Length: 484
Image (cartoon, rainbow, N blue to C red; front, side, top):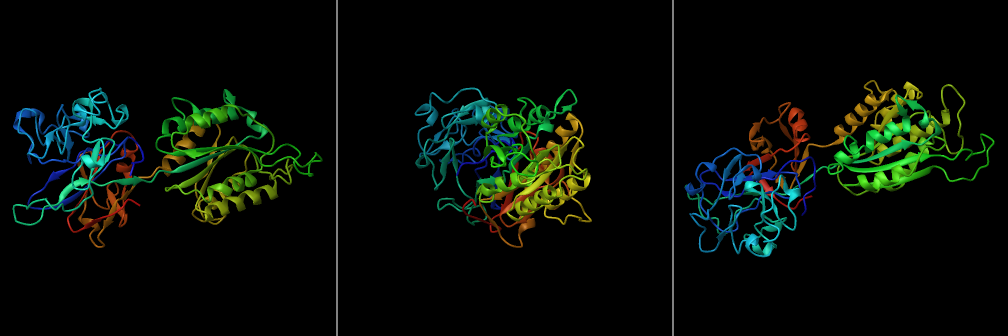
């Protein structure tokens, strides 16, 4: 199963034989490929002396190590070396430092792809990954190149945590457990940004219009949330309006389509599609917010991708409706408010939360609070209200989008298997080689038997860049299974 990107956590190599205390290690990483390969031929249990001081160097990812070594548990190591020792008769020593069950792909089918310099797996192509010496390497081309039922993914052999038939014995005589990569899925959020296209969005907002400032916050190539987070968040966009005079309430001709939507449905790596559609559109007329939310939910309620699902509503005016545009009341359009609240309530009931940002100060604070509450499943007048966001300048708008989008990016890992009930605290979780404390504020917890969550500062850290997470449970406390 292909891994899904989250932030830029990097893969780590984890296959090794453990004596005395068998462990099943779940090395979880969300980068641009899977973890480093499991050994497919048998080599030494310690780093070869011929590799000298390069053995044992501290590392977070394979590329931190010298050529011919890989990263395991925060230290550079190898199973074999071209200078000796070699692998047993069933394997050859690969350029990655792993023992391979057949010919090194970098000397065969992938010779043209191997050897290029890399900073991460995304720099390697054609079934290779970023290995020691910051060079692209591979351990397999197809799953039959891997032993023990392991699967070849992006140049690496992946095995589930299990006891192999030929695993041998520990020093104490018991069966040995293989410490191996276990695939996981990161809970990738889906965010649909619902942008008001009413005529008032052309109002000056600092040095530009409200419309352009919202567009820049979302789509700027360097700082925009969609381009910078498109690998971690499934973004979609809905630009909404209602043609002036849709209903009979303002004396204009009726019968025009309402709401008027420009739509790009959510996906990873969606910035180009969203940018092209967004740039081709501009401000229009009315603000039928409830109708627009309902229109989005006609397909969003059946959207099957896993992870949190949210609507982020950016609007600068009181809502109206397709039936009654142009509210003249200082308190807004009562029908428009009621329709927007009802639509957000229905969306939450279908599993989609709504966050609201006021672009400027024209939306009443009471309506903003009510929308924020029902959008998070609370009563309109909840005593513990949900936050809403009133942005009166570009910086506040940027901050509002940042807080909402960062808040829905998850630090929950779905494991390919289940922790035995009652054994949750027996696990060990480390971040960049540093042990985290179970159920501590900045540590980790088990949310259920198939999910582990990093919390507090640890969660913030893994959202910030290149990091390694390792999870280990003793044999008998974790049951491998398919990735859900």
